[in-house]
Image 1 (cartoon, helix red, strand yellow):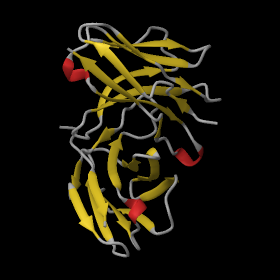
Image 2: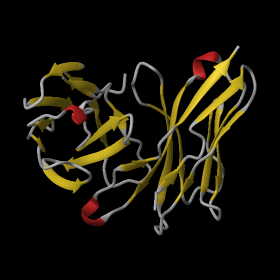
Image 3: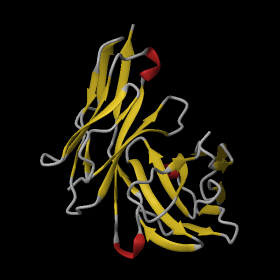
Length: 117
Length: 114
């Protein structure tokens, strides 16, 4: 089973509209972290936002917010007032504690977001 | 600028050859991670090092190997290259042991195998 599922391979959104990118995850850990990264066409991976499994409030960073629903194991990214520069691939990722202290990120397959003028 | 440096940025080579990708983590980060990004497989975790020791292995082929040196920089060695090894290889670093810490990614090394 996939650990991170992003069900939207691609999305077209009108500029200035809000966007919700879906992410569901699978873990049996109580302590874990959820991340969103942005990858523009230039290729670099840009950290956007983080949500801890014990955080009671949804994380926000500027125009980005994370709609965290723990019982449903979902961690959707919301971008308010989208801009042309938001066009990029968006990856949801999870960080768990693993045997031997390993703690890397597991990524979903990504959503390709295109903002239209 | 994430503070993670990867070289080379682009590399073109032929099948059967061997290449080495280099990564310098952010100052103070002890953990280094290698990821492979290809169109069909997405972002795949390859291997993690912590303070010079291998900590976790992901989907890393036997033809690939890595190490982390005492100065904490890391190298990923890819040998007997095949066309399918063409991909973007990312190095990332972090403060380890914390689920709260983001990974800081380098700009990647784009490998093309002809």
